[in-house]
Amino acid sequence: MYSTFLFDLDGTLMNTSPGIFYTANYTMNELGFPSVPDQQLRKFVGPPLKECFKVACGLEDSLIDEACVIYRKRYDEKGRFMANVYDGIIDVLRIMKADGMKIAVATLKYERLATEVLEYFGLAPYFDVVVGADTGGQRTKAQIIDLSLERLGVADKSCALMIGDTLHDLKGAQEAGVDMLAVDYGFGFPRGVDLSEERGVVGVADSPLAILKLLKLA
Image (cartoon, rainbow, N blue to C red):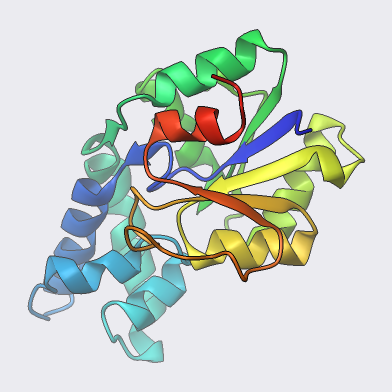
């Protein structure tokens, strides 16, 4: 049924939380605030960066732009390398690639940074395109999904599936009009989440290899 797969990056392809959490607290400390507990920082993964500092760190609007500058610089220097690919993801991508599927990354992470992270961890060769946030942070998740399909040359959205771990992925997929396979091994959705009432959700994978089983690719 599906021949095009759009993967979120943070919490879906890779566990990037160590680098994200470290950089968020580095930023807070640089601004003169105490570190934020890991449980609260789970909210930092998924949304656009400006929203992350509001939702997870409680920063006032007047400090958001400065926080983003500090965060991006430190993450680029160190944080992006503090990550690991989820066990089984390489197998998922290899099988999809061998089956001739079109595969993209559709992430709210800054596009250049996402590309560099994928290259550093050896995932880049599996993807046909990588689409992320623009420098101004104006692209929504739905727009990123649409742009991914445009760059892939895919006009029929019924053959496309978004795979992600947060409500931002789900809402973006719904707004873009593509189906969604949720994963609950990442940061966003809790283990065992029930999304059966959500429009367009075809299932919830509790591990990378479960993605293949749910899609009947293994």
